[in-house]
Image 1: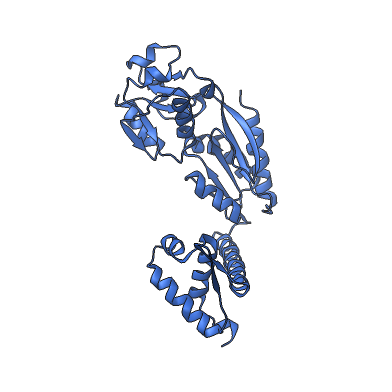
Image 2: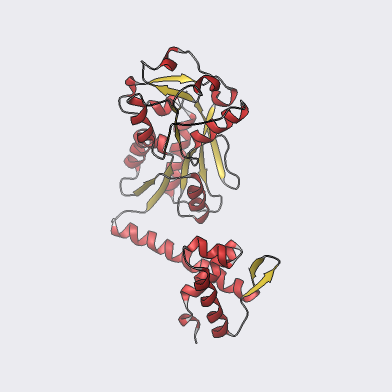
Length: 303
């Protein structure tokens, strides 16, 4: 058997076992039965007549041969993804592409104030804008599948180039006739007496709120949990509860004049941060570098 005819699926399973440290965990990540992974790897070992796995305590690790195969597989996948991006550029007849991840609450703001200016300078560049959870964003940045991201949260993740900027206070967002609207500021304790609309744990705004309530020793019991800012705003506008965001984010919301932003009276809430992230190892195109500079200039210039 030549190397070109080696079973790629089995080598892919081997790679996942190396990443996750065990057959069962790899199978869970792949969404398949562990017996399928085990059977494929046993067949691969018989084909190669070389051991690929060895047990160390409770974990399974790759042998030197297994590592060679897994590393080659990872490089092959990376090359294919790069080729796919290049083909995408050609399909769109563009002069390159830029991949950007933006937190949901900042998409309209970034498009209005940054992307519009970028497109004037690079009209032929294909811009791919996505939103999603922080963990996926970090994974895509590390793999080089995303050039940069605009994220929101109390702390910047390690291992990436990061520029952080102030976003203003975390506020309770309510209709004008809501009891909280009468307060100049609102405490976390006062908020526990109202129906709260929160975001999923992957949102930076939710990490801020969790830290505030934990610091105050309060139990955070929401009435609604959403994974879209539009859902939270719709609930808030119809008087279903209290939503949370920064005044800067509220400015980008349609019909914002129907809502009131009341700052939360807590040190953690007084100055929130957004983070511009990129991988130190990822080589960016001139267009991507220009977009990075525009983003930094915009967020640095906010009051």
